[in-house]
Amino acid sequence: MTRALRLHSLPMAEPSAPGRLFDQEALPHLDTLYRVALRLTADPTLAEDLVQDTMLKAYRSWQQYRPGTNARGWLLTILRNTFINDYRRRKHEPVAMDLEAVEPHALYRSIQDTDPEGTFFSQIVDAKVIEAIDSLPTDFREVLALSDIEGLSYGEIAETLKIPVGTVKSRLFRARRQLQAGLYAHAVEMGYIKPREPAR
Amino acid sequence: MSRLDCEEALARLHDYLKRELTPDLVGEVRTHLERCRDCEGYAKFEQSFLSMLENRAHKETCPNEVRARIVAALRAAARDS
Image 1 (tube, rainbow over the protein chains, first blue to last red):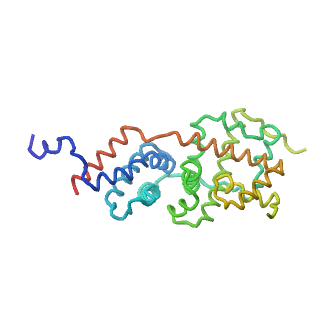
Image 2 (cartoon, one colour; image 1 turned 180 degrees about the vertical axis):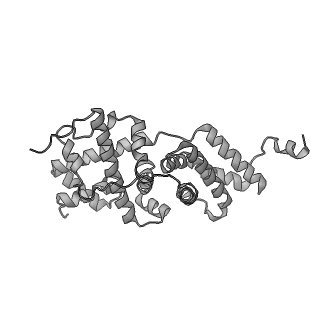
Image 3 (spheres, rainbow over the protein chains, first blue to last red; image 1 turned 45 degrees about the horizontal axis):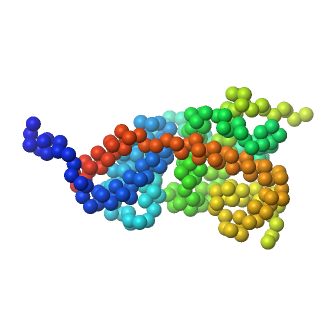
C-alpha cells in the first residue's frame, strides 16, 4: 500500500470549521431534500443521486449562504435547479388534466351524500397515494410537495421557485384538484366508494 | 365586519386551511363556515384531504446508507478543497 492510500484510509478527523457549520445548517434538512427529490424524480435511485449532488453543490457554494437565514429554502433552490438542469429526463412527462370546465367542487358534490368527510381517502394505501402524486405534472408535484407535504409557506415556495405567490397558489389549486380526481377514480375502481348515480 | 358570501369564502378556503390569511380574513371565513353548513362540509372534506396528504407522504426519511454516503462525499470534498 502506498503512503498516500494509507493516509486516505485513516479515520476522518473532526471536520474543519466550514464543514462543521455546514453540517449543523444543512444536514437537518436531509429528510426534506430526500422526500422532495423523490417526488421530483419519482425514482429512488435518481433521488439519492440528486440529494448527494445537491449537498455537494451546497457545500461548494457555502460562502453564498448567510448563516441563520433560511437554509432549507436555500438547499431546496439548489436541489430544484440541479433537478431541472441534470435530471429532468423523464420520457413521458405527465400532462395536466383539463379541469377548467369542471366545477371546482364537483368531486365534493358527488360524494357529499355518501362520504362527505372523504373517509375513502383513508382506505387508499400509502403506495397508491404516492403513485397518484408522482403521476402529476412536474410543476404540480413540486408545489404540492413543498406546500402540502413539507409545509413551506406560499411565500417560501415563491422564493424557492422564483415565481409569484399567485402562480404558487394557482398551481397548488390545480395540483390538488387533479390529485383528488386521481384518488377518487382509484377509490371507485377499488370499490372504496360508490360512484354517484348518473343524473336523472 | 363584512360578510363573505359562499363564493368569496370558498375562494379563500385553501388559504384559510393553510393558515395563509390575515387575522381579519380568518375571522370572516370562520364566521361564514359557522353559518353555512354546505361550505362547512366542503371545508371538512378539503381538510381531511390535506391531512391525509401530509400524513401519508411525509413518512419517508432519507435512508441511513444514503445519509452515510452523502456525509462521506462531503468529507471527501472537504479533504480535496
